[in-house]
Length: 85
Image (cartoon, rainbow, N blue to C red):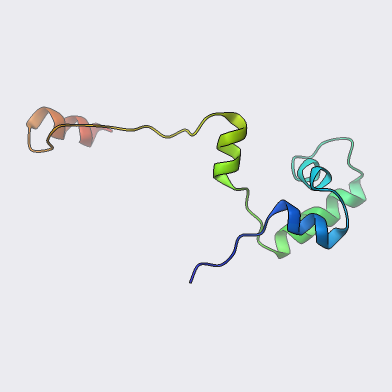
């Protein structure tokens, strides 16, 4: 069974701060106090927080994923191309 991923919202609720503050603390923004930043980082470590890659992709408008469509892998050219990738 897959474990539920920790969200920024959960961290914010547990620390009684805004989601924006949590996000800024994790990104090391200068307008977040060192004490708050440390509290956020500590809880994020405890809860095994990892950024949601889909959310990051939406924000940056990049997926860093490529698609490859080939007609048949049995042809030598396509097989060599696929192996090269």
